[in-house]
Amino acid sequence: MSDSAFAYHVSPYRYIARYKNGVWEDGFLSDDPSIVLNESACVLQYAQNVFEGLKARRTADGKIIVFRPDRNASRMTESCMRMAMPVYPEDLFLKAVDDVVKANADVIPPYGDGSSFYLRPFMIGTDPVLGVKPASEYEFRIFGSPVGRYFSSMIKLRICDLDRVAPHGTGHVKAGLNYAMSLYAITEAHALGYDENLYLDAATRTYIEETGGANIFFITKDNKLVTPDSGTILPSITRDSLLRVAADYLGLETEERPIALSEIADFTECGLCGTAAVISPVGSIDDHGTVLSFFRNAPEESSVTHMLREVLTEIQQGDRPAPKGWIREVCPD
Image (cartoon, rainbow, N blue to C red):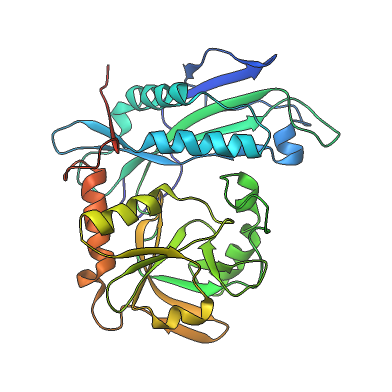
């Protein structure tokens, strides 16, 4: 597995559970990666779906561990409630994660090669609807794929003129429709030589929110970690972990607050964080021709961002003691 490849690779087994007549049926493992749907399935007509992302890794002593899956389970519960979908019980969610990891142990990348096993839990409305309404039948699945890094170099962002989500909308839940809103903009950004778009709040267009696929953070001149506080961005598990790492492992001051676009020139470092992105440095943000550069005073390798990534990565792969409850060990059968 290449360290620079974040792409889907079919794995031998995935977990499937179906919801019918108001109850979840027993889940099972399957070797079939295909899904058969009616042409009028709710997910196809009205985008009723939610998903999660988390990673399993091998440790230096050969164990397999998963990073904070309980938080993914609870976040999916919140997403399902907002999208009028039945909640998949969190204890069964965690068992399903274990089952998929165990069944695919042979394709989980080895320790130390920069790769991991990405797990994608998701739920879709499956029965046919024509009028606008929630589905009555659902399918919960988890599949996995060996992946490398999402970003392989210093990131170039641009301030996007389009809005990702609306105030009082679904920006705080992990629903596919939020990401669909970013596809036109990301295609345009790539064509213009940028790696991602940075979105502003849709209400005033004066505050930083997040990119199409990751949360953002900044480092001040006095090494304080600052992240946006907004009700319309995804509550990132990686960002939450990053704040803990900064405070408890590196002794840094942290702050969650609204961040105005007008103040980002005052920050010395910037990075993206997420399950896929992990912690990735941002080299510049282009605000309609005004380019704001970061890591101006020191190379990225000696930056606070680099230290944060090193510590978090060590925790995630079992090389450094983790806070209680962060690591779930999965023992292959």
